[in-house]
Length: 208
Length: 177
Image 1: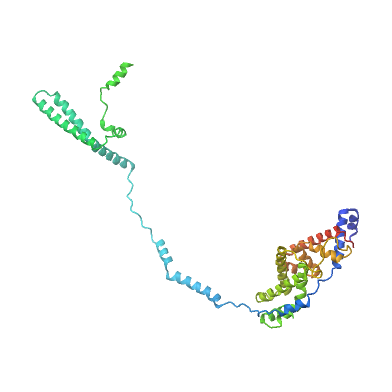
Image 2 (image 1 turned 90 degrees about the horizontal axis):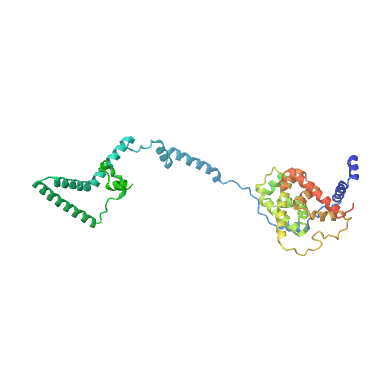
């Protein structure tokens, strides 16, 4: 042992214990007998075993031909074409352009929509307008003096009666009157507000 | 006969081939198996398994490699498997001549070899294998690494730990030089 190391071991308990352990191990290994030999019986038993002759596994011909066959198949597919070629042709050809109407300018579209809305409103309000016109004609006829007034009034009364009868039939048939929201939507057809205010408004103002 | 010639003899299916292999490596393989299994009958079973496997796989063996580490590697794997199998089965009564007496308190502190056997029995199997291959079989680090399938650095580490644990065990048990 190195003198310096020996001096340290003599002073350090821990290192002395470790050193002593290794010295004991060294002597134990030196006195360690060799492993016992296998028994004769086991040797004979091992010799009595019959082992099949070892054969080197040769590669079958398939190992050599399979890659060639695969390569040939791939080559045929590429050369002759097939489903894949059709897909390629489809990809190569330009895609058909769908026929889409050219979009109109926004102003023209709004004008068309407005016109369609007005037409719809006219058709929807035609009966009411007709009734209104008949009422106005009746008032004018009533204001007209003479026999013409009586004829006109009678004609208007008959027409009004007929109209009321028609309206009654439609109500009985389940025709629903125009809703408040629809009336509000088509209020622009009514034209400007009358010059004379509503009597209720006068009453309200007077009340204040 | 060198290793390559023996491999060729075995591959040729010559009837004397297995006998030549047994004569040459039976003792080495049995020594490792006996140290690992610590039971003669178990060791002989493992040796038989080892040679059966070796002869079955000789066709795929690289004849350029040495035979001894290959055979010892098979034996090491068989020992590991057998030890795992044995740990799962109930302990049977063993005859005195078949196994090493490892009962504590009965040993003579001056019986260095016996104490070393008992200390080895308490080592981890991989440490024990490396220790046996190095100190008893005299294999170099590289060959041990090939046997156990680990790097040389691992072999050195395991060998150092095995020595340290054995030294501490021996000194703790009051073994005297």
